[in-house]
Every structure is written in structure tokens, then in C-alpha cells.
Length: 151
Image 1 (tube, one colour):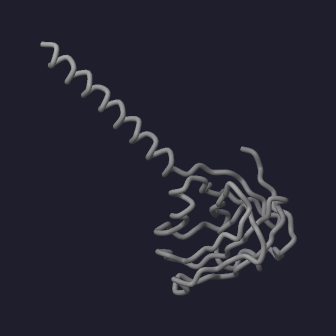
Image 2 (image 1 turned 60 degrees about the vertical axis):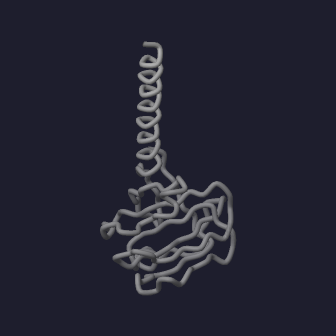
């Protein structure tokens, strides 16, 4: 009798751990959106701020709309390298320093550049990915300010 109750309790604890694990998995794999103003245009950006999302980025993503993008938020400023692994469309990659000023821009990177890794010239804390050609169209340059809008 006592053994049966122990097994039941253990099963319950195991179930709780599995449910908790699934919740954590989905939270760390789910993006939320924020608004970023770049070159006078407001973008609705998916936020990548977990280890999984920072690595996955836009891999396997459908092409971005003209006011959509992704913002990578790192914990510490560094020279973060990016590649076009599993990308299905070209993008502009814009590195932004902790002072919210653009530090480096790579224009119209094609998926065919993979496995080449693109690095900024100086440390960045944020990286923006938008449709190819956007940076030039909006006349965005190194040194420009990027605004993050609180939702």
C-alpha cells in the first residue's frame, strides 16, 4: 500500500516537472514583438533574447514584410558574427551599440553567402535584421540613432 502511494506521488512529481519543462521550452522558443524606429520608419520586430532564439534567428522564417524585422538582444556588448544558415530570403543586418547608435551595416546579404560569417567592426549589444535594401532605402548609416519604443 505504502509503495503504491510513493509511486503515485513520484508520478505526480514527474508529471509536474514535464509540464514545467514544456512551458519553459515554449517560453524560450516563443518570440514577442517590440517596436524599433530605424531611419524614421517604425518596424514591428520579433525579439530574439534567449539562447535558442539568438542562434535560430530568421532561419526557416517566411520573408519579412516591409515594416517587419527581428532584433537580437545580447547580454553583453561584443563582436557578434552572423551567417545566413537556413535563410530563404536576403536581408540587411544592422549592428547597434549599447548607446543605440549603428556600428556596422551589411547590405542585402544573400542566403548563398552561407557559411561565411559577417562580423561588425566594433562591439554591439543589439542586431537588427530587416528586408534586403531597407538600410539604403531609408538612408540609414553608421552612427545613426536607433530608437526602441516601449509597447
